[in-house]
Length: 386
Image 1 (cartoon, rainbow, N blue to C red):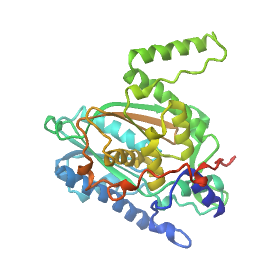
Image 2: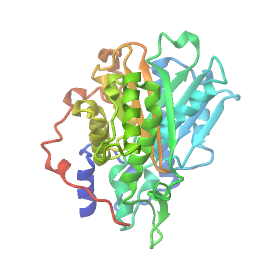
Image 3: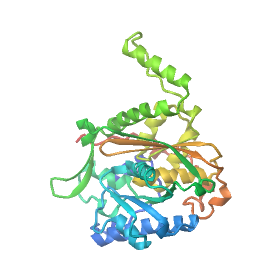
Image 4: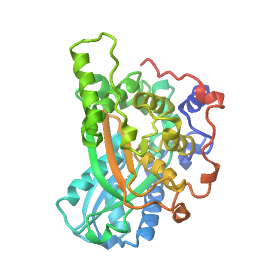
């Protein structure tokens, strides 16, 4: 318990995140029914709000993609959505599992490819994670970290390729970039679902995680940069790369492109405070640039694949999204994988329009909170040496 308390403090979580009922038992032992109830609460809650806001009927949706890493059930979660909203028999549905925190943006990429084939169509993407059956009840510190970081959450996104929806949509999807580094054993093994020596199932997080994350992120950024950066930045990056390869200067540091010239909002997955710190330093972003993600981590914890949508909702609730703004969402997770999605705001998002249906609406004026003056958020954090 002492290890868990210290870990929660160092990961950057606040005191008001959400856990499922099964975690509150004296001896947590979540059943299939507990996990299913959690999924119904999260999925039906966000989809109900989405359909009410967009005034789209379930029968009008042609594509459904649901992602949840750990919880696998029959009928599938995607079938649960089809049944609940009485979608037509010809609906195309996919259920993604085992894809980690990256799955939410991977689902967007999949929906995008399906929309390129199926015209005049709506695609519903639902991102969530089952916390009930993720509860680790053993004593291996490398597995207890998951209990400390992950919290209940979910998001639903509606995409369309119908010309009539262009003026009423919030964003236009510009780029999706996907990187997979499982060819490296260290990347592949840094997050693993396995049993401990006493037979307790849990997710092991080892000391290679941060290194694997940075490697995957760097590769993803290298693929993204030519698509979004101006020619001047690309030339500087290429010149620096050639000079370092030729060892013209032994102390030449890698050139970090100025993404702030083309990106207005950077919203990375909120895995942990340490990962956000590393990203901020690597890309040269300010505390203001990282505010949405840090506040999401503090208020809601790591909600896995849906966390990037909580961060976007924060920026919307603050009234910071203006017409033409480019939003960069980045997610990374087990495998090890990294995915970036670039959106362009079609119109300004009026803060007053976010009163209903925005998860931050009731408390947005209380944020940001000052994390720098809280000693627990500045304590060093170390992964288990397993």
